[in-house]
Image 1 (cartoon, helix red, strand yellow):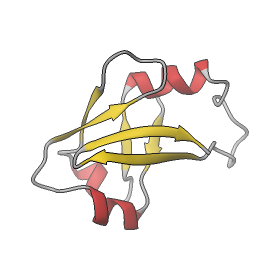
Image 2 (cartoon, rainbow, N blue to C red):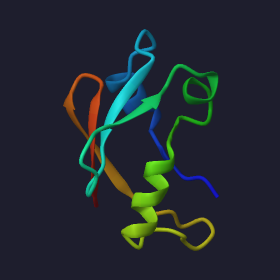
Image 3 (tube, rainbow, N blue to C red):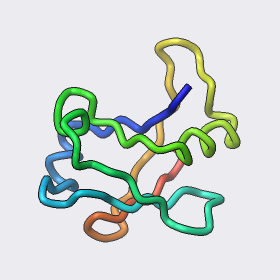
Image 4 (cartoon, one colour):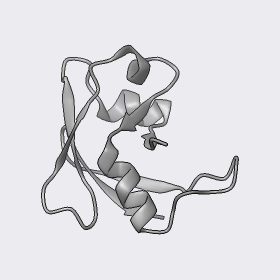
Length: 90
C-alpha cells in the first residue's frame, strides 16, 4: 500500500505554486531531501496528496502506519523556504 500526505486547500493555495513541477520534502531520519512531483492533476484536483515511497517508509518506521480506518495520523508540513517543506509530528 502506498502512502501520502494530504495538503489542505488553504495550504495548497498559500504554499504551492502551479508553475513549480516538484517540491522538496525533508523527512525525519532521511539524510537527503526527497523530490516530490506536484505537476499532476491529482495534486491540483481533489486529491491534494504528496505521494512518495519514502513518506510511507517514514510513516511505518515511526509507528504512524498503518492506522485504523478513518483515523490517519496528523502531521504538520513546515515551510522552510518556497518549495521546501519539513515534516513535523503533531
